[in-house]
Structure formats: C-alpha cells, structure tokens
Length: 414
Image (cartoon, helix red, strand yellow):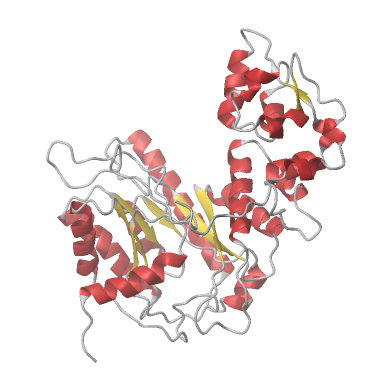
C-alpha cells in the first residue's frame, strides 16, 4: 500500500473531525505577537469564527491526530469496526499544518482530537506533544483547544492544560444507561472523575496566579463538554438536567450539543434517522436561558411537552410563557429585571435599555417596539402607559398567532 500524502491524510482526518461541535474559542486569555515575538494572536482579529449552515464552527483547523481507534462506540464513525479510510498524523505534521495555515490566514487556531491508539496514555502524550512543539519551539500564541482522553493518566492531562487555552472531555451521552449501551468501552464515572480533576487543576492554577504573578496558566478558557442528541432515547428534559449538573459540579464553560448524524455501516442499535437539527437549536436556546436569563433547569423542563421534549415550532422561552400565562402581563414601567427577562421577544440588551429608559420617563408601546425585532411577540405579555393586552394574553389560539409561519424557501433564490 502506497504511503499517504499529507493532503490525503488531511482530507481523511479533517472530515473525521467534523462530528465534534465543541470548538468555539470564547473565554481565553488575551495573547498576541505584537513586538515581533512569537506568532499568532487570540485577540482583536486573531480569533474569528465562521459557521457552517448547520451551525458548526469552521474557523479553527479542526482535525484528528488519527482516526484509528481501539474503542468500538456504536455512534462513532471512527470505531474500530467501522469500514472507513484510516490515516495518522505525526505531531510534527500537525504542527507544520497549523503554522502553514496560520501564516496563510486560513485559520486562527487549532482544535485537536484523536482516536485512541495503542493506549490512552500514548495517545494523550502525542496530543500534548503537538501543543508543546507549538508553544515552546515556535512560541505559537494562537488558540489551542485539546480534546483530552478521560482514561489517560491525570498527569498527562494536566500537562495538556498547561499548553492549551481550553480542554474538553466529552460525556458523549446524556444518560449512563445510554453510554453503557452505545459506548461499552467508556465509563461514566471515569469521565466525570477526569472532569473533576480538571476542575481542581483550574482552581489551583487560579489561586496560584493570585499569589504568584508568574505562576503558569492552566486552560484559561476552561473546560467544556459535548453530548450527542438523538442517538438514544434520552429526552430534552434528561439532557437539560444532565447539562445543569455538569455546569454545577465541574464549572464548565459550555455544554455543546451535537445532533446524532447517521454514519456509514451504522450499528443496528442506532436510530435510522437523524433528529431534526432544530432540536439541537432548541437545546442551545434553553442553555442560553439558564446561563443569561435566570431560568432554572426546572423552568426549562416545565417548558417541555408531554414526551419530555421541547416544542420544535416555538422557542423554549415562549413555550414557558404560554404555559404560565398567570405570570403575565408585566408592566414594563414597574416590573423587575427578572420579570422582564421572562417576556418572550425581550432580550438581555432590550431589558437593560428598558430599565435605563424608564428612569427618565414612562414607556409607551412604541418605545418598547424600538427595542425588539417584532413587537407582535411581545404585546400579549406586557403593559405600557398606552397598552394593555386585555384578553389577548389568555386567548386559546395565542400559540398559533405567535408561532413562526412556515415559509417555502425559493430553490433558486439569488
């Protein structure tokens, strides 16, 4: 068999990495190469993101070190029983690609994951070696996100955090039973144990930086994780509950959701169809509500329907408001910030402007309309000086009035 060229390896290993959604680079420490020292930047124009039509970040060089794997997770295209083309980079080849793409302004950082070869420790050592060469030999100051392997020696994982801006450990599936069924080589307790160790390292490094100015940084962009949605029977309520526990227990920066994608030669235990991508979108919206709007996991769960899933035709915030209409309407001139954040159609910025504006004068409906994209969605849930919804809030057909209308897209639109 002829040796693969670098381009052939890149084609295989970049394609194999597309299933990993957790590659956003927000939250890292600012670094740049101004002054002629080093290469790369994580501020200003240094990191920018582009998103594929399905919402996945494509701005980083996102590749696997190898798609060979000793594990046989049913949902993974790179499982050992999968009949796919295989390839493997050396650490130096990944370094050369990263620097070459960066100098051509194609990418602003590196997202590196890997299948597991030989052993978890050996694979983790190879991943860390890529980051070490970039940071120590080339003074690379761009963004580095390393996917760590929970079964690896914690000391090796710790070294990864000293070089990377962010580290992540995938919990893979929302329930332990789903993980046992679809990824029999993985252990939920081991995964959460590794996340707990990273959390402890993050706290220790932060404390050390307070006491010693030059103490080494450890993953300044924190840790994140990813869950596959739709590969097992877990409901949105299960997923939201799991995400909430992960945020609370491990101080995660983000929980990412990846809608299950059918893969070639799929196992018979997997569903035949992928879940609708809008389900993934609704979960991200619920995540946003918990992180920025003050919703509790129980609030989001209350917005689910009888099957435990969030409605697909309306967003979770509107779904909650329609279920709890007794909480509305709220007076935009008197309501608290928490009450205003519950109004469908009012975002965090709009609420901030309402609170600032009403210090100077009483707000009318037109004033609120200037702060929203659609006052139609807001009207049933607020009162203003010149507006009261009267019976509109309680109308039986309110959901149909507010749900986005189905739109036929043009096949050959300009």
